[in-house]
Image (cartoon, rainbow, N blue to C red; front, side, top):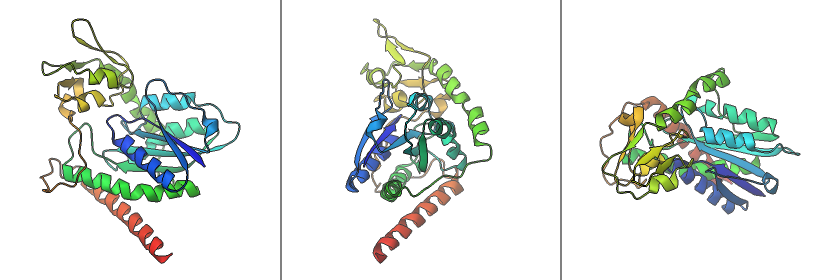
Length: 293
């Protein structure tokens, strides 16, 4: 069996999850490749037995470039398995509606959604998670993904529960697609900039240019993926209206020796608690099942 995961990853969280999926698929005997949805992306889906779509959740929706990619997917002559992988900074149930648009588009093209998974990974905007929380999130995902991969392989149907009227809610929140483009034009680079040009090279929509005088210009195609500001080595960005939510610098995901004080310890506290409890229950149940075999 051969599968491809077409993915978009703003600052690396979704890519980490996808890379783990590829590793696990190969461990289980599948041929597996990952294809980033950045700039030009052309896939011959006839070469694959199943297809994955992976993305970070933006304002309870898939990013606009992922939606556009799905719209360009060809209509299949024969039905094909589809699975959806998504990441976000909080385990709120409303995030599940982010698949609604993609589900509708791909269904019309002959893809059959069998599995859908949501992994909590640390924020790249709003606020910075503690190192301990980032480690716990990634450690949990690494334990879940091998189980979830086997579910995809066996085509055991796993769906996420949606809010009532998911298409309507997602449609309202899709204002972020338009707002992101407008806000992106307000991005600025300050005097800290060392002109390493990482932001220009790595922007997924080629939205950042530099003129002959070294001045930065931001176009109207911003996804607000935060790749430019989050990855900036000198924290030189201002991100328009949302500058107070800016987070800069990669997470190392290592188990910290000291547990630092959480800056937002009560934020979605119960949701995180439920997420980790559900995850641990699934992991423990799988371990018990394997031990009994």
